Image (cartoon, rainbow over all chains, first blue to last red; front, side, top):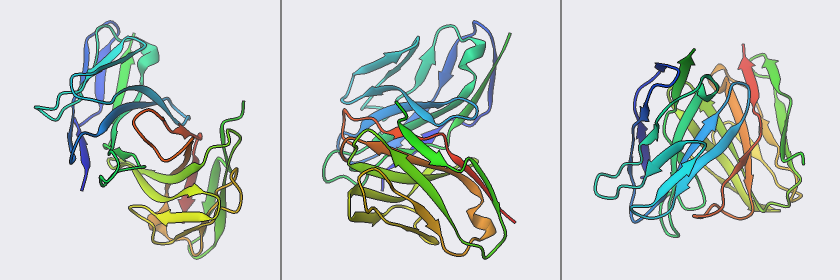
Amino acid sequence: GDSVTQMEGPVTLSEEAFLTINCTYTATGYPSLFWYVQYPGEGLQLLLKATKADDKGSNKGFEATYRKETTSFHLEKGSVQVSDSAVYFCALTSPAGGTSYGKLTFGQGTILTVHP
Amino acid sequence: NAGVTQTPKFQVLKTGQSMTLQCAQDMNHEYMSWYRQDPGMGLRLIHYSVGAGITDQGEVPNGYNVSRSTTEDFPLRLLSAAPSQTSVYFCASSIRPLDRNQPQHFGDGTRLSIL
């Protein structure tokens, strides 16, 4: 079945540092890929998405590029802020006929802590 | 705009007790789902519904029941709570079964502890 693997956390950075959170996936066909963010005490919010190969999703200074050849969707930000401290989830959904059609398959989540 | 509302936010149960986690959305979304979130395992799908009167099992359905009598509500029932069900539970909804362009909207979660 479909699966998503994220880099092990937690990740601790100083403010203004560069962030990369790795995400790789296994799926049939061409899934849609998502990054969700969960701030403390809140539910998940969609951060960005990409629906086809070579698409780049971006939002709030975060970016991720859909790489079909490496089955990856790594999250990056050039300069993190304390307010970016949260848990980040990579996820996918399959097109019709796929294992994850109509559902989100999540990675295990990566805790990010940014210090002033 | 309430979005997806979950109640209660916190609950402690004893082993063997039953309870219902409530989920309501005011966006007229057809698709609703329940996930559980456990450390190091991300979110796993418990049950989902593609519309009123229709439910189906997800990845980890054992020990949970659901029903969907209205578009707005999708309660999750624990019939006989077990310590393994200690988790944070999230309800989510979207306009229709998730496709490439329809993100899910999540509630703030219910933190459940089973003693």
